[in-house]
Image (cartoon, rainbow, N blue to C red; front, top):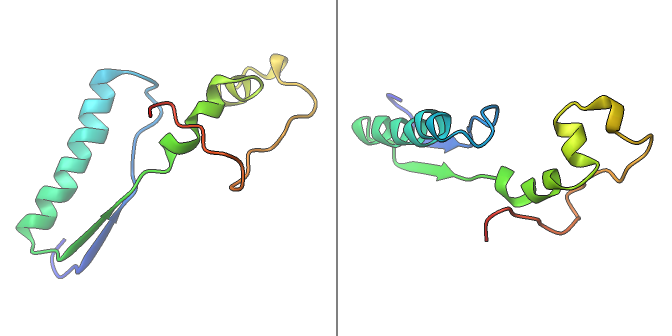
Length: 93
């Protein structure tokens, strides 16, 4: 972080599902480390954003649950592709 003006932090571990220990260790702990290292090195700006939570609600519906879970036998031959112009479906409001 030395000599860095701006940090863009978009990272998150989504491989652990809804496991609190992984979420705490990687997502919360990792974010803390980014902010702390930025503070210690006089980073002037941090951009922090998350896009995963805005569309994650789709993953709780068929066929997206099956696609994400790689449950190939249950994925239909066709489905609607999720695009950036579809309504947001956050899992938390």
